[in-house]
Image (tube, rainbow, N blue to C red):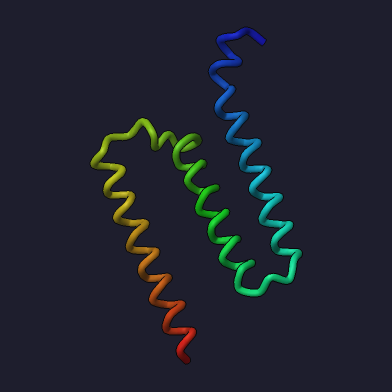
Length: 92
């Protein structure tokens, strides 16, 4: 492989390996009996994995600031709805 191709695909291969490693962490933690910590860890790892996919495979790092702000607003809205749902469920 030429050095140009290696430089082009290098970050994608590293991100792919990181995603594989994080998947392994998720599977390992799911097999342990950690209670609520298992769910918290799974959500944290899923957040990291989705950030990697958004930045590298969906090329979000190359988008304009306005687009990133709108995406951040959408993610914040979904997170707020999920948080309110979990809080409502925990007090029933």
